[in-house]
Amino acid sequence: MYHPQITKDSVLRGADDLDDETEERLNAALWRYSERVATLIERELDEFIRHTQG
Image (cartoon, rainbow, N blue to C red; front, top):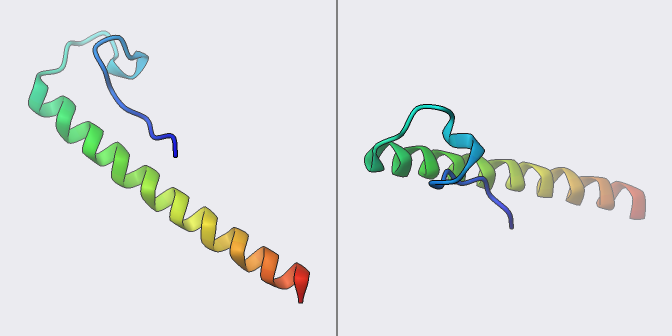
């Protein structure tokens, strides 16, 4: 699964330089967000499949 991540050459970094701790916290938050979105999409897809097959 793809998840966004802030790296040294990432456009997500913006013009300001981030310290390592902030970068790690933001990457952890992006990871958790991506996991939640994937879980919600999977639930919706499962529900859709269940309704269309039943």
